[in-house]
Image 1: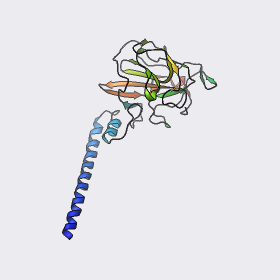
Image 2: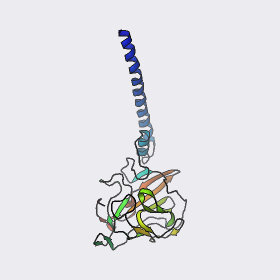
Image 3: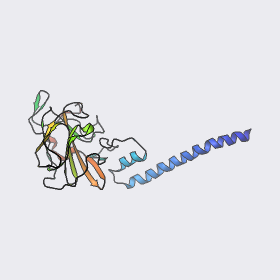
Image 4: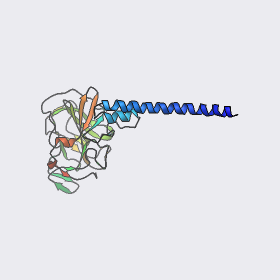
Length: 233
């Protein structure tokens, strides 16, 4: 009887021990491999290896610096290179209205990886619907239309950068059009996944073949050019 019991216990223990050994080996392999990757790629690869659910367009994949790994997504790269390819300034020009109040500078709401919105990969500017949105980089329009949670979206590309303007009311541009710095590309609104009228302003950088990151938009404008409003809208 004892021998039978030992045999049953052995049959139960072997798969458990094998599974444990495989898990330990997997963790060791991950721990040895990930440090060899570029710093920006490590969080995303970690999430993938451990099968952590990710939102490929909006998720930060655990990164809390000034970039966040992403994918190309629905907005494909057009390989356009032209003049005015430097990103600078702000997409909103004062005076600006938010609800019934008027401001001489744009209001900066939810920021990149905001403490209250950690998976946010752009900068939000609360502003009334219908406010003109200006291009912060010259380039080619590679998207001007509805795009799921982004709502009505305009994307302008130049070189290794795409600038995204989301939740718009209307467009002043069409796909394939070349725009200059400061041109009005559309008007703000509350379309898509949005809880109030605002502009979501995002910057995507191509870092290699089939490799992309979101970049903190605050790296491209003067902090004195905005009023810190906080992440409420």
